[in-house]
Length: 417
Image 1 (cartoon, rainbow, N blue to C red):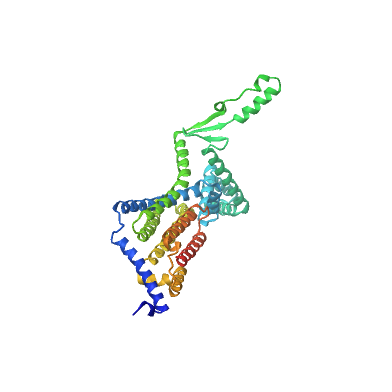
Image 2: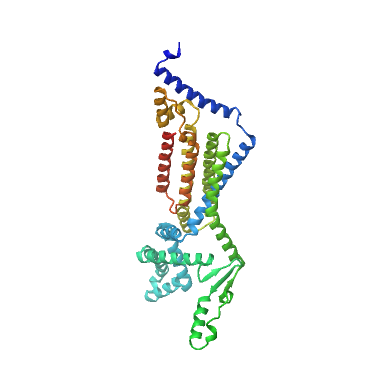
């Protein structure tokens, strides 16, 4: 058959088939080692492993930062705890126990009751005094439930926490230094005193500059407090360093890999594994410590507190598992499998355009979105991970919203590549 006898439809089909064979040939060339480099494979694998470990550390560092070192998030996490029935019961029990123990109220109530009772009924004074203790617990619970207490509790938490952080970070009047010294800064007081003395005739003080160290008064010294400051400073650094280190190592590892699709799959599986291990570790460790609490009321309160405080960590953990699963599916979908190729062709706009051009006898080069689709998928994953880690209010709703956004983004990548 001569070239002139080939119809437009057949020419388009041959052109489309040629393009498919070219792509498959490139895939096979990579797989058979034409561009395979042992050191690149090793470095890529190492970076991906380090990225997964850094992601684990980033989850813990950001959760600790938002839960313990951010006043607004700390108050929003801790303040609602007094609304839990288990916590209210524990608070009431402890408050009544301390009050009755301090002033011997049960014995006093029993003696007062015995004075007003006939001798034949004095045996009822003891159970009545015990009932008084139960009544006190009910009254305490009502106090804890009141709006006045809730408002005061939240305000007290906010003030105490913010002032403590200012001291640890050397931002307030009372500061904590690396040597474990609690220092009161009275430099401003000395400055005002100097100005007042200069104003009443001691003119030589006008141009005197007060040294910074003279205004530092050491109130308390404990070497362990220096460790607290060091730990807080380290957490402040890790809060910013670890998430970015994780995503940069992830990008570097995938970019360096001989087979980027497989690298994406490995990174996704690695993230899922470390997050599942973290969930398992939390599930194992928490009961071990809670079981040490012998009092059932206190143990129930501790369980409620642990579940509430750990909720943000669990949400981020579950969110990263979902992100990893979405990335894994997208990476598998881009693979050289028959079903994946057919599905990709069905949704890919550039594929439809190439087929259309092929039918018209026009040669078209692959779109840049097709060439860099791996990078687009990876950058989307990194953005979703950073969003989950840096959002101050981690919850199931946030995880669902970010997952939907990332899923839509991956669909857009498939349609444009």
